[in-house]
Image (cartoon, rainbow, N blue to C red; front, side):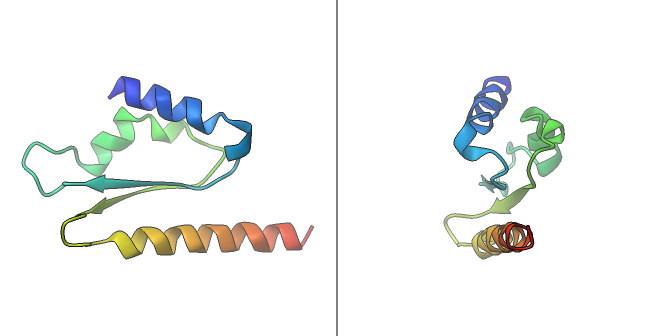
Length: 88
């Protein structure tokens, strides 16, 4: 998990991604050995991310459960950014 967190941070440090909202789909959270949202947050060190909004959404790719919630989150966040830019 540490390696994943480091790689995520490297990606988020890219100039082209500055301020872009982060959505993490946590697939297969229904399985016994899966990490919960708190464990993922800690393992990926998400609390250290202060330059963008982020959200973890537990999903089932098999059933499609909560996939829409993630898309709606991104739309909402991009709309907020668009409104901020238009007031400048």
